[in-house]
Amino acid sequence: MAVSSASIPPPLDVLAFGAHPDDVELCAGGTLCSLAKQGYRVGVADLTRGELGTRGTPALRAEEAARAAKIMGLTVRENMGLPDGNIANTPENRLPVLRALRTWRPHIALVGGPECRHPDHGAGARLCADACFYAGLQGIPTEDAAGAPQRPWRPQHVLHYMHLVEFDPTFVVDVTDVWEQRLEALRAFRSQFYNPRYEAKPGEPETFVSDKGFLEWIEARARTFGHRIGVRYGEPFLYRQGPVGVRDLARALEHKKRFR
Ligand SMILES: [Zn+2]
Figure 1 (tube, rainbow, N blue to C red):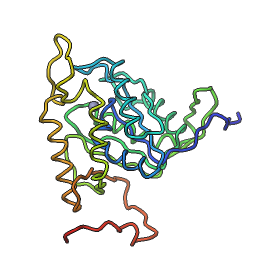
Figure 2 (figure 1 turned 180 degrees about the vertical axis):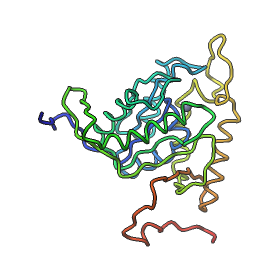
Figure 3 (figure 1 turned 45 degrees about the horizontal axis):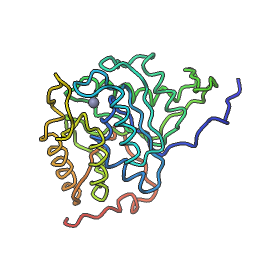
Figure 4 (figure 1 turned 45 degrees about the vertical axis):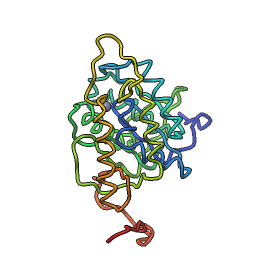
């Protein structure tokens, strides 16, 4: 069967996956803002609608996610529609991720940290990292939205962003000059994070992430990793696929610390 090219969009430079709408903003929002600002094509694929969340509704979270996408300057944001709380790494659950990878053909995929307090985060990260491999196999067929068969695609690089559990990062991205923009993207999730103007429905309690201290911690962590590379704010990433190939060593290591 011929693969139709009419409906295939231009590829993305970076596609970031999150278990729930807001995961990507929390852990890699500054990096996405910075990439989009530099003219790269950046997308987000949320695995679930976050329907098990303590606060907000799936409809409200979809609105919030769309607003955050606009603030960050994303080219596309999609929801994979997997069931929240049940994103085990199965062939069936990987299918929508394979479809997204083959549609958007990113050079780089960002996935969650390997471990977290929330089981969905680690599970989602494993599912997406594995899907990045399987999407390159010819033997697993998928179809696009129009029903046309898709070509295999494997991102060149898969990086893990950091949830709660820390790792020793391979890269720290300087997000200092987009810090306010990344906070605005987080504030778009007004039902989820600290927001004195959010009117909680009866029975909606404060949560681990809606507590004011949580946003302070987000800033403290960005300051911590920023400090490690000599800037104000930084976001850490882990590269687990072996050595990174470099053609121009001087350019690859062009970042300068103020103090050495
Ligand atoms: Zn989450």
